[in-house]
Image 1 (cartoon, one colour):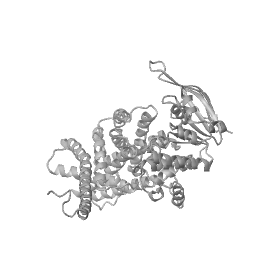
Image 2 (cartoon, helix red, strand yellow; image 1 turned 120 degrees about the vertical axis):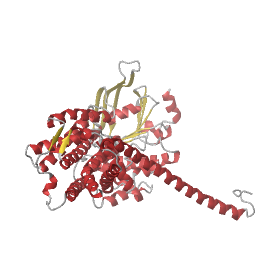
Image 3 (cartoon, one colour; image 1 turned 90 degrees about the horizontal axis):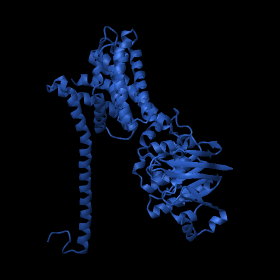
Image 4 (cartoon, chains in turn blue, green; image 1 turned 135 degrees about the vertical axis):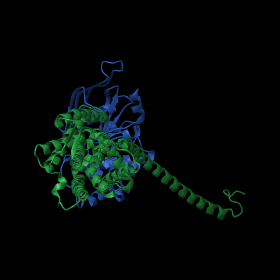
Length: 251
Length: 316
């Protein structure tokens, strides 16, 4: 089954001005259920624009986006979030800093039911969330009632990741989600990411600037270059790639 | 003096709570306040003059305020007008609407039964005002406290705190912001309706300076009561409104003429904005000094144990 179908996607910034930039040039992409795609490309190649257009932060100028068999091209971020979660590059973006760890988790869990008059905190929930937080191995289970702004960047990003997977999304978008962390924490978060994706069989698109991560994780690799998909390899073909070949493809 | 500012403060409490919702929860300084406060008063007084009961009039005032908030909310979220300007636009528009409702710039109540008169006639007016204020405040605080315990309230808090994250988690952020504007201005207009009944008239100019009063009450309240528990924060607003009234009464007692009240309000706001900043700075400095002294003691001990004759930190 196709989780995501991107058809003839076009995006032009500042049309009609001197700064006109054609960022996405007729992009076609199909994502199968269970795919774990690493997306790489130069700065300005259009990979973030592609991800933002899929997530709904930007609207496509032409083309269609089908998410879990729903045409979402003109739909809001909130609507798309029924099937999709996202972890941002900035750890501050993915969590609400003034709210507690518990409150953030509640927000992430009941995605489709955001306006109702039921108590948001029920008995038993705390234990359930604590169990989940223990799996992150970051000691977050002891900070259930702490405001998220007092956590470290790594803890916040791990929490964002847990929140993104909590609603069992059809598609998980990771937008350079380890780029703002120090090397060690970045590695840890990447490890947790991989474990979660494997455990829940999540279909994932991950933008990364790290060649090593792109090669090491996932079953598919997509390279975006000058607004087009230049390379799309899967399975054995992807496994046989090495850094040198990849760097060559960048030329 | 104390008693009367207590009663007045309680009537102003819904204003402080309304401003708190936009200013603290949604993180928006909403100037609609200056229009919705007299809007509530105008609607309430006009309805009472037409024979409606004081309770109906106060509720209608609340709904009128919600409508004013709806307009600002739509201007802000759907037309993408900056929130500060959106508030100014609604406020300006409301001036004409208020004039139309009232017909002239000042409308006194005649012999209509105001809310305080529903209370036992044996009590003095001041006691009646306090009891009425308490009833209204308890209702408002309870409703909001319960609301913030529901998923709806959580979505509202999340939207104000991090819009991107809220949208990514399925929250209709525009809807939440509009809802926030609506209840905020509803409570502000309710306060206007109560004050008009207490004063015995509605006046076109009664909204001038209300945003300053509201903000000052919020900040004064937060100086007295801190905490991130929502109930504490709501009660802090009530305390803030009362203390603020008290400050004004004291100033009046010192002989300031009523014309100077506005500049006094502004000065009080400036002071209460600065006080917490200075407080935090002093506290941080003190804590830092303590911490460094501890560190020094520890290093001193370490050094004396290793080099008993001359320590690096000693002066000789």
